[in-house]
Amino acid sequence: AHVPITRVDTASEALAASMGEKARVDLTYMSELTGMSEETLKTELEGVIFLNVGGAESQDKAYVTADEYLSDNIREKLTLHWFLYCFLPMKTVCDSPHRAL
Image (cartoon, one colour):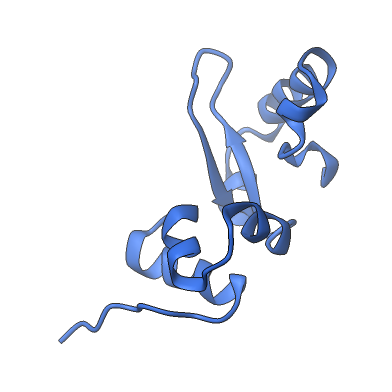
């Protein structure tokens, strides 16, 4: 029988649990498992998860693993992130993965 994970100690363990249980990066779930804030999780997982802003016609934003982020059209993502970096207030793009690229 499946036993759900209810507590982990690290951000990396929380990410593994999230991928196993939810099949996606679920920061709310990961926060519940660790007791860490979502901001702390993002910081701890910098370079492992990335903010994946949907295409220019989309308003979708979600964190994804590096593998998923790099599997899509990277040129389109770089263009979009450059636009965000140049034209939005810095607070808005602080979570942008353009720094890691």
